[in-house]
Amino acid sequence: MHKKLFFYIGIAFVSLSIFAFTFSDNSDTGPETAVKELILKSYVHGAFNELNPEAMRAGFHPDFAIYSAKGEEIEKYPISAWADGAAKRKSDPKFDASKNVWTHNFASVDVTGGSAAVKIELSNEGKHIYTDYLSLLKFESGWKIVAKVYHKH
Image (cartoon, rainbow, N blue to C red; front, top):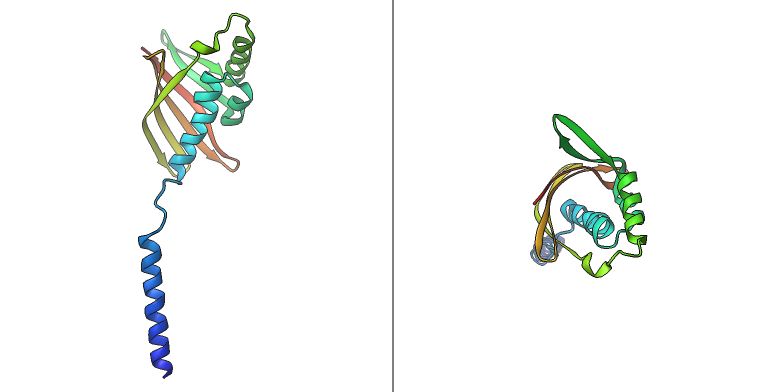
């Protein structure tokens, strides 16, 4: 009698396991989703749409910089200057928030362990303005944007 009971319990356990895996939630909740959410909040909305320096500082590492070529030199634009510039631009009485609507397209999101590279395309008023390449690292506190290089179209 006990053998049959263990047999049926085993069959029930296997059946429930198969059922659970078959109908499990396959939504994207992994590191790519976390990276995209951070970029939307701190980068697309913080740095572009909302010009929100607090959101920027929350998602960017303090040592972040935008890197660009200037002749044969590398020019660095730190997050502190960018966030301060966003606040100043937003407070300008001539600033027109209705024209400050940026759309985005994630061209690629590549995550390997605690490192990520994102290619994102930004458009304003229907025109493709920037292709940005963002580097991210995962710290104990979570993902942070650590560097940007870009192409202005």
